Length: 376
Image (tube, rainbow, N blue to C red; front, side, top):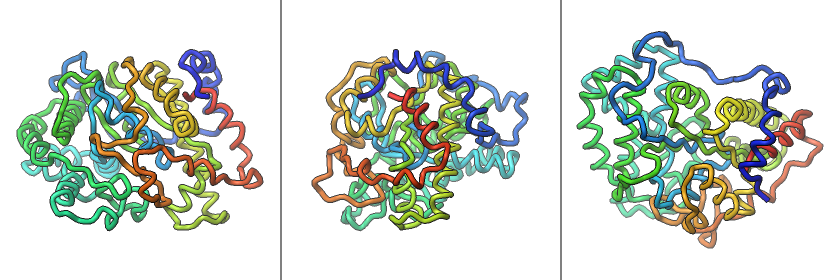
């Protein structure tokens, strides 16, 4: 049974010492920028103060696509065809060379630079648009749950090619090219980009409760940056127990379903420090950060989605009970392929593969106990 927002609020004091309990944190890297420079301050021109922004972003392989597809068709929210990597890839560039990254945004080719960041080296939305126009059989396309590690991907969901309005998105970006080039802050650039991103949905809503939306995995440093510079940004983030996370990680990254020492060690490092980071974000921004128990989202979808809607301040809608992307029913993005009977369902098979407790690291059970208290 999912926790209520009120129950979670009563448990928040346990997060006050989370970093001390489970090792040095936060682990996210802060880009090497001059934080006192106005360019790294708040947005100045790009968005009205009352425009709210929503991240759908938990750690990778924790159920981001479950939550994205759960909320996709809600009439009070914007809808996106999947995860976009512009912000995450730009932050990687900042870590390498901040001056060069900013110079690219201010160059005459700034839109080309942005487009190649949408899919980590590929123009993801153009490639998805081409797929939707080509008639390529859906079962011939790699999706995000099975792509090669470190490589970009075009489709987020298994056997599902989403028809996107790439021409409208591209035109909006091109119309904003000069504004991006001359933006007084990166936050202005970011808001401009999110405005263009919403054009991928051919039925773009001007009345959405959240006027900006970004979907992506593991954006801890990026969200820390944005949250520090806004008062109207929110996040819904799934967290998954390590016992089932292990198999998703091992299958997706190493193509194995066996318990192997090296794989177990790497899986734990990924799960542990990212989970702690998200708990720290919840502790810092308790009213703007909503953590969702992956098991509850799958096993009690209606009650979970009702609490998510309460957090967002929007009415519950029956559309939350059917996974979709831009209104198209999906089959999820599990690294374990599913048959057609899984389309339009929140299947529970991901909860059945559980790592035997004899393999759990020492901190696993106490950390998950805390996580289970502060997640819906």
